[in-house]
Length: 338
Image (cartoon, rainbow, N blue to C red; front, side):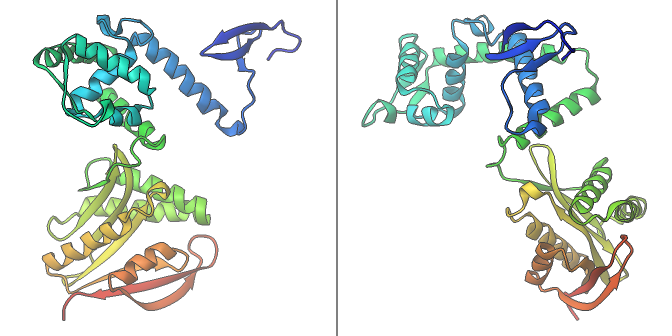
């Protein structure tokens, strides 16, 4: 705020702001955590932009006879039919009486039919032919208007935007209940693996550039020398966000090495680490390896538990200072067959 500047009160996005002579807007509501204030402002700014561009404030959503909330309830019926009003109420948090009036409107329009039930909220709702036609028209219109927002973007920009939207939804909890999936590696994954592991190890243990250099060398070597059928990397992800990874590489004709197992902090406890290691063991057996070896550190307690559960055993322990301070490292081995 400019020193001694004249302040003008305005109301924006259902919140009070101050606008100084330099045009800088500041919230008058104190934030309990100042560190998140910029993100709060960014989200509110995007909400204002998107609701305006998509006509969400228009009483006739997408030129239809429906308001935004009515269109959303129409959508829930279409994608969930037959669906109970009780489920819609729970999922959207809409007032039961308000929901009942909207459902009644759809019934009078001939768009839905109600099944039998003990009460109104327990009677399954399904679309009629007229309802399906009305929904198809509204859905097509929404698709066209949304696609219009992307006009002028390159394929790479569209892909980046899609990944960013998925990332935001995942971070804000929209995907927390969704199952993760595991796939084999692809272009761009090695850079992501290197960056995320380097950042996490630095934050947790202060291992910094030396660890990043080591991870980068392992990832680069994997790409350069990849041997299909003998080596593999698996990526765990959800909603387009990488949640973890692991590598299995050839150490020799009969020995494979497990490398770079990691799981993102918010995804720990879902069983991803165990799933990734299991895939390594199954792959190694199918490829004909006799044993798997790995190198880890005593401070990585969660990973060590996973290895032990799979039957790996510690063979040797040593202390090194490769990462800038003394660390206890361990070599483990799993015998698959004699």
